[in-house]
Image (tube, rainbow, N blue to C red; front, side, top):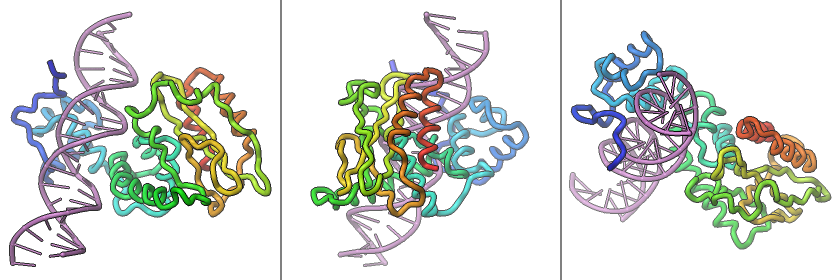
Length: 248
DNA sequence: AATCACGTCAACCGCCTTGGA
DNA sequence: GTCCAAGGCGGTTGACGTGAT
């Protein structure tokens, strides 16, 4: 037995939306507000699935949606947020006002993932330079290991050293759920002076020398992270805020 | 001009989460 | 605690546009 569909597909319109359908949907939402998506098509007189209405509104018709190309600043933020959060597009979208999760996801898949892969490929093997890496495990829940990580969050060893002559900026990476609610998988990777990481698994290291901002105090980051792990309530949100604070 | 290959992105699908009964 | 409806999310699909041959 398959799962019951969200609504009866019989007699429903599919495919691209027409301008008249758009108008009906927009007018209805202006009058009645968002929500009640399942009953909306009937009430508005649309031959569409409620989910389809919601998607059309969220990704295209909403008045606050920003159109046009992704700017370099936005692209930079997407890359950095993705390195922290993985494929949690809705979370990333919340940081880019006016952009939708679908748009960011598409942009990542069609533009950024390939570009970043090329960068990694070209730097592989001869890497005296730090890598701009994607955390493969972070984004895909199916590929995330089920709590059998090389170093469990609470047990991981982090070298809390600041390397001379200068400290490097580090990111805790893959702030994302693993298999169990409230367990977080965050690692801190540290660059050596030659740009290579000390820890080479799930590394997520960005060359920060060309970015504004001073290096972080590694001890402080680690202390804050440990403190967050001790606090049970709403750990997910706190870790995301923590990740956010590192982007500021 | 015709065909093919490839990239883009709107839309769909199915699973997960949440909240109320 | 369980069930169910509704909403939310990320992965995937496929139509369409465009450039190369």
